[in-house]
Image (tube, rainbow, N blue to C red; front, side, top):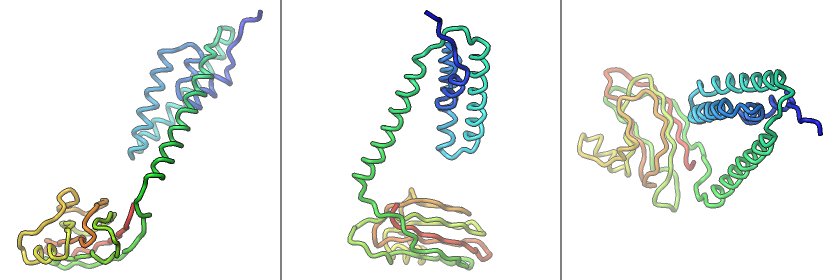
Length: 222
């Protein structure tokens, strides 16, 4: 019986499909596992918003494919680890089914409103003035989720309050209630999602000696 030979194109393809699997096909188990872990780290960085993850991930894939192909070509007469093909297929199926069912159940149980832009405006806020927006979206629910996006030319203080009465107390420099986790102090850019009372809103305070020009976008739902 003829001894099975390595296929360089298959080694490269496996590393392209699943980083490091081409090395495992070549029986370089330690290298393959190490490259696979590096790929996972880069994927995590990429999906959490770090652009460096995309760059490093791309370079790792290029290296893994090249290394797997050239190694297989150099050692073509050595026996490959054929189970690498099945392992790659199984992992792909597991990942696909995981994404499918996660998306299905998230959609099945979701009761959130679709995201809708309800305000998009540029405003000028004079020194020591307060801008308020809220309580205008009609809903039968006691709470509602808003997504606020604000960019200002000057640092501003942002408070999310449960009612217009609290805005009035803030305006009178009296004690008021607000949502601390949604607070922004001396901020130029604000991008946050907050679940608040349906009667609540956002108060933007300009404590600067000059005018603050800001753009505000408000989405309801998520």
